[in-house]
Image (cartoon, rainbow over all chains, first blue to last red; front, side, top):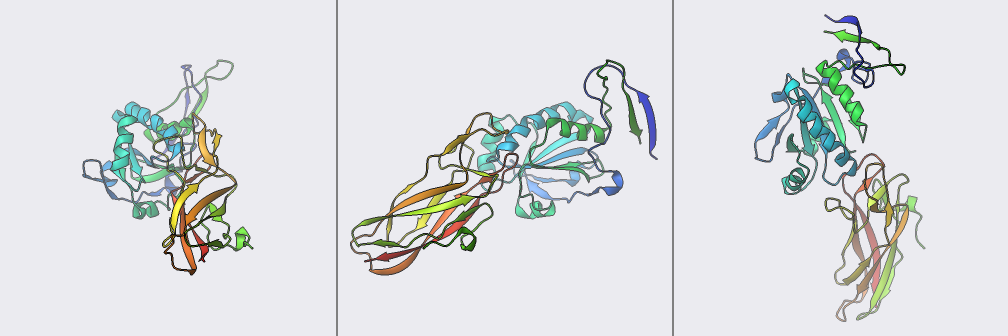
Length: 185
Length: 144
């Protein structure tokens, strides 16, 4: 059951959040296609094993400049949210595979799992021609948000917070507490 | 006379190549072919000398036999700053020419033939990048 609750938010700073503003309503989310791709150790990684977690599925490549802007954000998200039921899964579209990805991962101290993608998986996700392309997947394995091209760190954070049910507090410009509408499920 | 870009068969998603003029070269001598490429508005490609070790350089290669490729000369790249780059990047934008100097060995058979060139590039806009692509160029050559 979904219940709308009006709550009063404290004054700890930051922007007021309109909960789930960027993520699709649950009824409009479609299942994220499952796949099996290899990690750097040659182990099969499936999306299905992430069920129950919010997943940021990021298609990227070492030759993609905009992707490199986002990666430090994802490293931060992985660190910040990994104990809250969240994971980043990187899917590199580099043709040379881990021969080029491994040095990049080491150099940039990437702390989340990485697999090598292929055309078949890309097609399942609509082609993924433009990089970066990211899919925010809810705990039920459904695509809740899609970002193609470079977007802001705040947009990702908002999506993740919404799907994890993390409520953000905020203040108005005049310093008064903000009233925000949250959805309790 | 070269065909206009929009009539040229050598097209790819972002870069198109003008149909090159026929090259005439005497056996034992050299000749230069200059080919004009055009990149779609709003996009850039890495130059042949990109600014970062992970970036893919633009390259023109030839299946030139029985001719030899002595040198491929790229234009001077632009250094441009994009919102995703901390430093200016070495790129090509708009129209640019690439020159190739061929040599016909003294033993090269006389007559007409078509050489195949492949321009491999990787294009980006200001907020997204696209997988490497290849545009094929057909160069008519006559050895005399």
